[in-house]
Amino acid sequence: MATRELDNIGVQIPMQPFRQGFRDMSPAFDKLERLVAKRKLCHGANPILNMCAAGAVVQSDPAGNKKLHKAKRYSKIDGLVALAMALGCMRLDDLTQPSSPWDDPDFKLAV
Image (cartoon, rainbow, N blue to C red):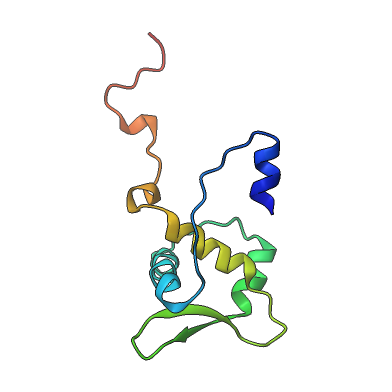
């Protein structure tokens, strides 16, 4: 297991379980969907993420929960699912854009 290997070299990374069922993926997918709709998701035209997005469709359960699903059985969507899961682990205040020092009235270029 990867965590055992990391422990062997003294690396501690906080991890938490994240299931890929409807219940856990729906809030994560909602964050991803909101960022895409608001055009706030910048991925630098990454060709792998573009390929993943092209091969993904939204699947819903009877309760209205949503998750990503392969459009075709050979589609690769792992990168997009990983992005949604990462967003699902983040708090909303982690999603704010960094501010510019020029927006800070107390910012001084030189003292």
